[in-house]
Image 1 (cartoon, one colour):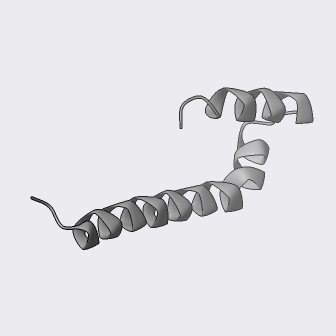
Image 2: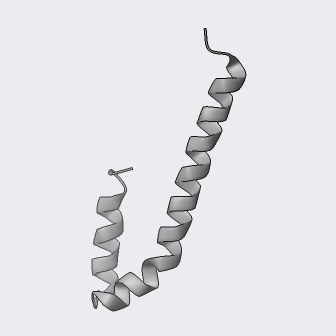
Length: 54
């Protein structure tokens, strides 16, 4: 039987990993927009479709 502490650590690690990935993506948004010459509408559509992928 798994202990509650092990489960808590697993969930905490998953949330921390997700936070690091999201923070990295958020800091790179301006570079992605510039690289692909996107409009604000294009960025909005990209962010809309990234939502369900999480």
